[in-house]
Length: 113
Image (cartoon, rainbow, N blue to C red; front, side, top):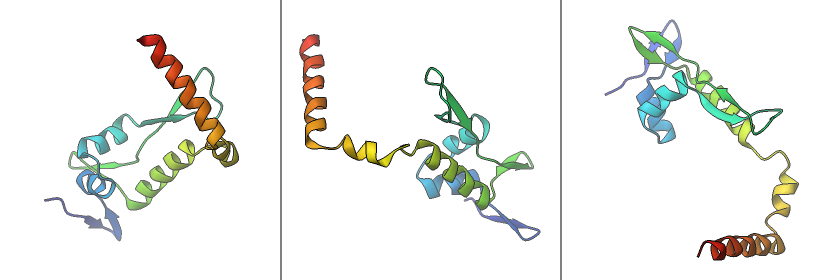
């Protein structure tokens, strides 16, 4: 069972604890540390993405994460993946827009049959 480690007035989380907080597998947390997660770039060119990494340190070959670093990671992902314009998103949810999308989906599906 993983335990929170406290050193020099710092609290460190294990990947298993981070995984439990965010309902993911501990391997996913390790991937966030080593590979990062792709998020839309600020100035995308051809659908380019940038990568955001979860900051961690290694103690005895094991990763440890500070709660502040976890909060910053979540904030960066949330900000990067949020809609740029909430009004534009709301406009896409009008009944007319939903009908247009449904009709377009029906046409694509009919073309496959």
